[in-house]
Length: 79
Image (cartoon, rainbow, N blue to C red; front, side):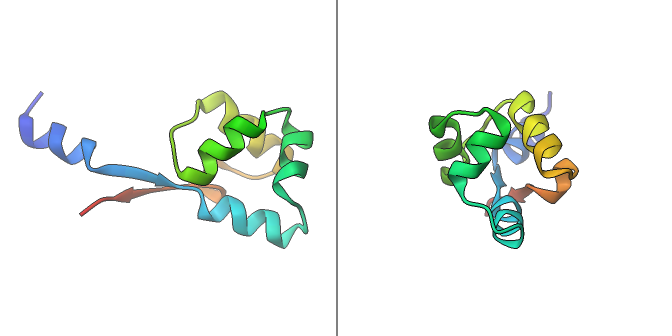
């Protein structure tokens, strides 16, 4: 793999701002998210910090919120 490509990929992060807005729009709290999805508070804290989570977690959230993955997250290029 080209070094420039590796550097570009490494300079990306994930934002879950859309998820938090969706929760507000549906009048839900983070504790409701844990109840609806079965994910742990530890995982919700990871989401809050913008840390990586498994695709299984993201799919569970999408099913519970009746949305697509692009409705809960964005990939952000770090500068």
